[in-house]
Amino acid sequence: MRLLNRHPSRPTAILLAALPFAVVLIAYAIGSEIRLAANPQDKLLPAPGAILDTAIRLFTEPNKRSGEIQIWHDTWASLRRLALGVGSGALISLILGVGIGLLPYVRRGFSSFVAVISMVPPLALLPILFIVFGLGETSKVVLIVIGITPFLIRDLSQRVLDIPHEEIVKAQTLGASTWVIALRVVLPQILPRLIAGVRLSLGAAWLFLIAAEAVAAEQGLGYRIFLVRRYLAMDIILTYVIWITLLAFVIDYALKVLARRAFPWMEGGL
View (cartoon, helix red, strand yellow):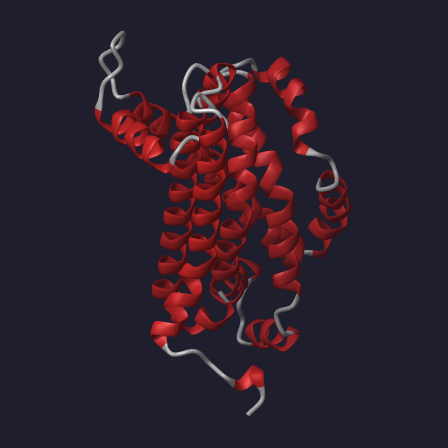
């Protein structure tokens, strides 16, 4: 039997999935042990036990000044910005993606513009956004929108163009208007793709969020990481990084489950 036709059993699949994580953890533990053996005061690679103790403290002990558990407030601030940015970007992308893919006049007017905008590095616009929108929440949300929307628009518009033309013709033959075709023919076919596109753009959205928070913010996960870096508090930084990774994984998994339940016929393509 060819190797490409062999599929691992469920226990083997779980073992294979866990193997890379175990290798990374073991490599880190060995590296930390070597550095701490040479210098017990080393801060670059804190021991796994020290990171665990720090995590427990961050998630349970309130700040002595404010009386708040800081990591939860940072998490809420970052998730709020992320939700606003990704949600706004997804809505704009859905409207323009359908318009560009379905309407020739809109396609002629916006297709080239979106293609050019998608080439602009979003982080290069960060100083401009701070000047235009100030240092508050708006500039951070707008950066996320600018960062992910062009990609989503191009992806969705192409998905609309890939819809077999016969479906559009049949709908028109049955008397469907442009609005009805958009809602009843196009929308059901691109919503699964929208969720898939959002999942793919989450990594970039987190990057833009953390970058904006690092430059100008008073709370947030990115702000806290760059605040404590001056003290070389790697145990805190690594705790925040692991927490961000876990949040991103949970969001991605939730979107995957949503797509699977809402559009079960598209499961193979998600």
